[in-house]
Amino acid sequence: MNADFTEEIPESLKGLVSRLNKLSETTNGSVEVDDELAPDLTKEGFRILSLVGRGGMGKVYIAEQLSLGRKVAVKIGKSDFSKEARLIALLDHPSIVKILSAGEVEGKTYYVMEIVKGSSLDHRRFLSPRQLAEVMLKVAEAIAYAHSQGVLHRDLKPANLFLDYNGNVKVGDFGIAAFQNEENFVEDIASQSGTLEYMAPERKERGENSVGTDIYSFGVTLKKLLSDSGLKSKRLDKIARKAAAKDPDKRYKTMDEVVLALQWYLSKNRLPVMILFSVAAMMVVILGVLLMIFVKLSNPPPRPVDRGGIRARQQHMRMWNTWNMENGGPRVPHVPQERRR
Image (cartoon, rainbow, N blue to C red; front, side, top):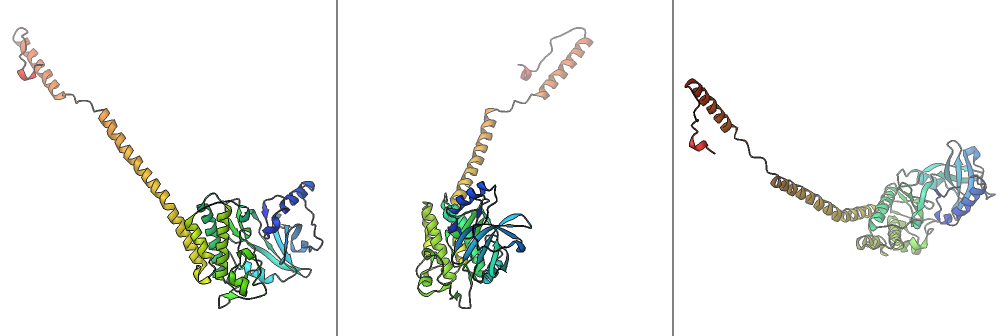
């Protein structure tokens, strides 16, 4: 199996990709399932190839979709994934991993997802704050869209954010996603599930989940990626610190506000470049004008020929010759004083 495929449980990817590559090399690309408990999805149109990740909420397999001959990710668990699948299926956004199908087999629910050909952000190092801000803007837009559909992600972190080989950003692993209620927060058995490092204080202490808890996780993620990439940006760090404020009242109120903050950062960050290009263009125009003036001064136009004076002298000579012939001999023509040279 190639390392081109990134599944929905990226923590389990570490150390497994090399193992899968070795298995692929020894079996000419055909990897046998090493999990006896994996259900048979052949009748559902999928052939499971290998187990690549497991967690408390289920297992993730790489499978082949028989009708199209393409690789997909299949998540299977003992718990009912139908709600989770319905949640993600509602989200139709270019930066959210797509659900392809869902069902139940052998008493286990499953759903099939697209595979992101790339890597998660916990394996990425960014070259500039601007590059990082552009990626995180796409993440913020995806989460803002999910919130607009009433869905909370509840497990935002670098390992659940992906960047494919074409530079497209994908938000994955909505494994503990939930609907918001009228009070804009949820409390259920999975309220305190997730990764402690990225979990808002109110989730840890009281099991509260809201738009604000997703914003907190986003802020911690942004700070983590800045630090891991060795980047320094006061303005971008300010956005991260506000999003990850301990006090929910001091955070951004909505993810749309985070989107606007990142857009403003990128527009302000673009101004020096725009000014530089404007000055350079102006200098080119000025140099062009100066060059044209120099060429004109170095190559003055030729003096015009006094064609009218030449014709007048020629006519005068013809008339004088005619007079000489008529009066018996040549004489020196009289040239007016002002025409002598």
